[in-house]
Length: 326
Ligand code: SAM
Ligand code: SF4
Figure 1: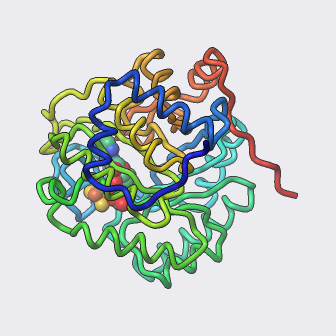
Figure 2: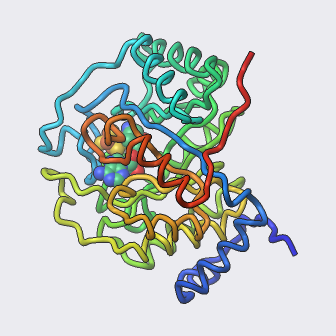
């Protein structure tokens, strides 16, 4: 029997999944995964920081916040040609979704946004799925990105509503939900997930999954980040996250949001080959890869194209292929 996609999960139901012994949970998630996806196909994404550092927000995990003393050198918004050249190289390396991040609090209607719209137009015309993450945004701004061909907007809830205020104080959980609602007024798909390893409890992880799994419809893609502890941030000494915790989050996300793409995001470089294999068994079907072992410019480590190609081949998995555009 095929599982139905539900958006009415209760906290108690999610807790029950979350508390399931690991191998039993992974087996269950794997069954769901096979019903909704080709389990041998993995989406390969690349993230480029198109505007780095000097962000006014105070996100406790982030290397790019002005509130954190991380030594990240601020860089202005990249020019269109440079971004397009990077996107072409990514495409030649098997990347199908090109994600671009800006260290902004929110989108402003100015020349910088005009340039991002042009970047989206040109990268989309290469036949890549484009994704941007630019902070908070209204529906009119989302519409401009939609018209330029944007495929996805990333805006993470990051953690539970209960834990959120201990990580970020310069914007609210509701602000995040409002931006997601603005994106939903267009045809742009929503990419929304979060981070584990910031000191949150299991109750917070369950509550965070509840938020994601009761969004109607579910996010099209769900990145699960493991905190990359950045010296100079309030979370530099956060506790270790064991692989079983990441695998559990992925498995529960897969069961709750069966049709979504579940992405292993930041922190994958810390996982062994076999831990990553377990993530794929648990229903992950998307990874970030990189050009120079970095996800964001010199901020978040990431595996590179060649090692990821070799890993997928060894596992008998294959990168998703997009139809070329004319
Ligand atoms: N300024 C935009 C915003 O906050 O929406 C986009 C930039 S930021 C790259 C997007 C996401 O990256 C964050 O929501 C967070 O989930 C993730 N992230 C940033 N720093 C991280 C870290 N040190 N470890 C793990 N994930 C991180
Ligand atoms: Fe700014 Fe985004 Fe980093 Fe928060 S996560 S400090 S909003 S770049």
